[in-house]
Length: 429
Image (cartoon, rainbow, N blue to C red):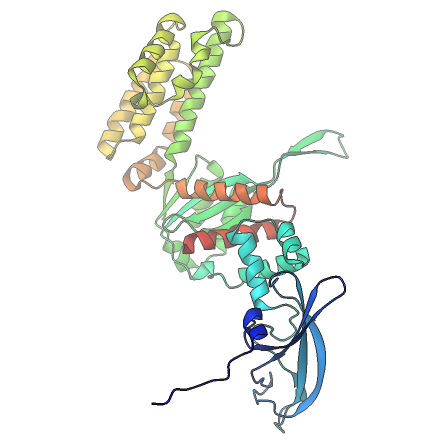
């Protein structure tokens, strides 16, 4: 019985573990850094015709950047140049290359992969990653941009349900108008578009108006747009305008969480107004209505018996007009409407809400009712499909972590690169 045998690499090559390379020798420099001399172990072909080079033209040493191996190392590659033996090839000579160090590269592929992994998988800042690997910030960003090019093309995807929501790209700033000398508030918003089935971020556009979302949808192929069945948004007229223009056949669902937020906001405004009307001041800790302000916003079905008694005390002691209780009932009826499971139940809940609104006769509750009426078609889509922006909000949370790690971003393109790569990693996992 015979066994196939192969030449065993030396210990230095095994420890260094750079594919397709062989360690020639290693030196220790005066300041303690190690210098590793390597050469290739595979054949190289002409980049023009593909003929394998046999005759060596020359050899030169090239310094390449690599990952730290038991500490920082300096890698010197004894790079060979070959004659091209193909008579019809216009290229006379060519330099060798490997998968780890392609043509015109000055760093190994494993280094670029490690940089991308440190920023995207581990959530480290680009500056911190550059310092840890002993490279420049520009190399880290170049590796991220290179990784961005291999992501799946959005136009080739076929999402059926989309979610759209906005977030702040940078903090609020004030600029002085040179003509009027007036200070203007500037809020740099960006809008995130997410596939609700997979949770992957499909696009990040500037602003939160209809133009940004509309331009992004217009850039998608017609078949792509026709394949979208439902889009979930918050109560944003700008988003709805863009969807009506570029996705006219798509059902639009309004997010239940944002509708409940409007109900809570209404109740808070009523409480603040009643405090001014009855006491002539803002609420204080001695006022039951103010002390239990967070309890008023809680869902009624989650209240314990003790919490229900405290809430009843607020209505009995600090609500002589009954207007606060009327607002609370309208808020709870809106929540009940959003939890219905059929259009018939939703219509009945809407009639009950209308009765409460007419009986209360308060401007804040009337405004909430008008919002419900304007968004009734979208509410019906929510009840039928259950599509919400929950996965968009989850991505916005990850985006906030990216901004905190990077201490904010100035370049929008770099910001989008990190968001798209991070989303692709989370989706693949």
